[in-house]
Length: 427
View (cartoon, rainbow, N blue to C red):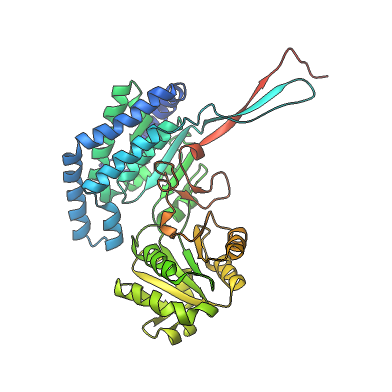
């Protein structure tokens, strides 16, 4: 485990400056490594994680015990906890990334100009990425695999609540890098101290090209305020599920239950249910009963409560809240335009879904809702890089620049222009 005693600002700056220099040197090696070498390293991470499962689970059990002792909260403990299935999922995601087509060197476009020059736009790595994340130990491996795939080096700062789990997983990454002949500095883990986080946000002595936070609203806001490098993030996941008047009732029931209750602590969990007034009398009671039976607290507007009285009154703040818990706000709306207007006013540009059998209505919703992910007849819980075929994600971005939605290996690249001439000089 990295030295957690690095607590002074001066010590942390020195440590991060060294890590930054090492990462910058390692990135030049990594960017020139073949796709096969990087694939082998990522696949080896999966092997190492499986071999070290007992050690990883033992470390995680200690983290979870401390989290329970400190009343960290059910949602955070769920994100922190590892088990056999989640270890298998970590390895599976790494292997999926190892098998992906390599983004580096891929041509985005090619054209000629009147001077006779041939110009190509080609994908290249961003450089050195700093990542600050909370709770989720799987991020250690997901970030390592995605940055290796995209030719970037990464400096990770995980939360203190997952320090043992992160260290155990990082040890697997280091063994895989060594075995593949790549520098260990391709993936580094800082001490889990506030001073280390601050030094990383200061830019690790100018080495950091991009900062990615992954965690709650407080963490993301702090990173956006303090970071000296550009930040790729989403602040909140206030996701909406809209039940249109032409929805199939059984589909609406199944999707609503899954979108809210599958895992309440993920950023793709639905936080507000919107339902057409024309469908509310016939559909809302069954949907609400399903959710209530599953342990969800409903907070509704006056119309929703008149139809299903077993709801608490919703306040203005409920429409703006990412609960990350078994709580759902419910509003009856007067048609499509009212639903789109509600999302525009209260949403966080993360993920929204419409349930309808009317294709024209679906297209209207998908066109007019300006979120990173818009869905038709699907649970918002599919807002996930793995479910998008990316193997995993380093996070979900609600930015408009430079990536939006799940951020996989391709989204962790930038580009350069490669120009071929035949001796041209400019008049």
